[in-house]
Length: 128
Image 1 (spheres, rainbow, N blue to C red):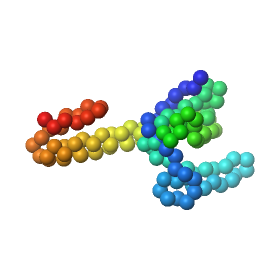
Image 2 (cartoon, rainbow, N blue to C red; image 1 turned 180 degrees about the vertical axis):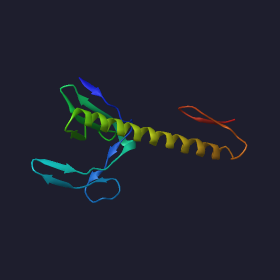
Image 3 (tube, helix red, strand yellow; image 1 turned 120 degrees about the horizontal axis):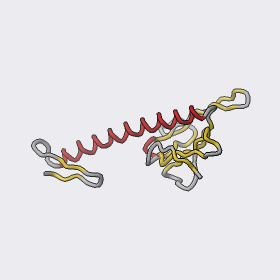
Image 4 (cartoon, rainbow, N blue to C red; image 1 turned 90 degrees about the vertical axis):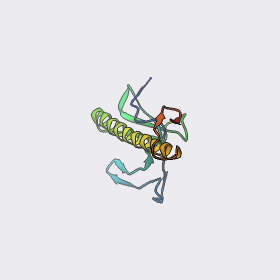
């Protein structure tokens, strides 16, 4: 079975190519390995998994195609794979916190601005 090293919920990779903001970039050969630069939107990452039989390999699933991984990365060591998951998880938490603050701020503005408190839960905001 898969072990989940969840980095975040929603996500999508950029298309390879022209560097238009949501796209992945080039590759460079070094002997038998290839260095790859890739772009993906953190908000589009559905999950990251690894297999017990290959803990150095991470499988990235994105919202656009949830049934199979769209990106697979193999690290030199299991520790590096775990470090990558931890870094992505930290970036995702930071992103979610910013989104939450932005949403709360927008909800407060829609209540008519100053003097109103906004109560929020996971599904909706209410002016009180």
